[in-house]
Image 1 (cartoon, rainbow, N blue to C red):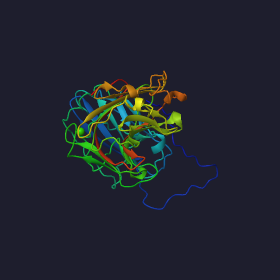
Image 2: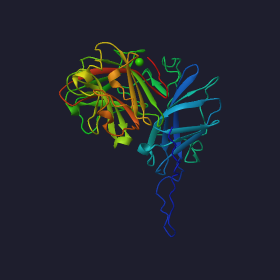
Image 3: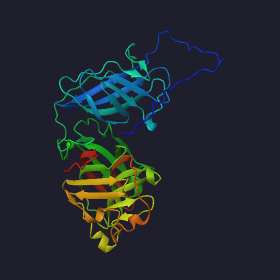
Image 4: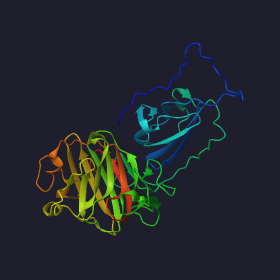
Length: 378
Ligand code: CA
């Protein structure tokens, strides 16, 4: 997990500056208010935490608290969360660091516990306790909800695993954000209750033909080591001859361009946005070493990205796809083109959805998305 130095937001008045007191009620504004919404099962829980800032704008933020029991945070999203004993610190990330006066920010975490999962009560924002003053009346109080749903199957060692069963809105929320980079058209991302691999919910992507009809939902990924990913995907229209993408990962070692997985010539392929290299090479012999993505059925897609070694592996239905392997040794028709330059990816997010560079539309469902530092399996 990345560590960020907690840059305490300090604002100093220069000597001689007049202090202006705002007109209004003389009551002290609360430093912060915190909503802590829990979903828990027998041994684990997730918490969605919403922080409402007080009257002082913050350039970055750190929320601290203590757990009363043996709660242990195992992963987090939209914040860097560290734990030492019972003390927990959640620090902002660059994209959500600025917190204006009265502004709100949300992040989440997953953890384990035994016994009683007592909610923390001593939240402090940048070192100032939140609990001393009542929250502003405009702050909605979120009741604690308790469920008995078990953790998603096959996720024991995953950094995170999402079966989307906790999603209650029309679009995926929590760790997920929905977007269409650069331009937006008809592509949509919705939580679907008609088709699911597990339970009763999945995420449906209706992607249109043409680049601007793309649509993705994404989350940040663990920051270092070999990244293993696993998700179940079901789609409607066979992979076309044209180039399409259903997964994109931002590669900060490649100028922030995407490492993409999708299809071309009716078979699965990887593609680098930066130089349009493909894996396998799109020769007939290369394409023959990949496989189509079945339609109308759930498929288990797995990948491993080893940035340090510059290697990549891919499995479909638990079987490794030979044409979708970068093993560091250039193989004609497979990874020779890919290895034409040094490649050590450092991916920072995972986006699932649809992007077409031609006119190819598709409707896809994704479910049971997991990331980890070891292979997760199907
Ligand atoms: Ca599900």
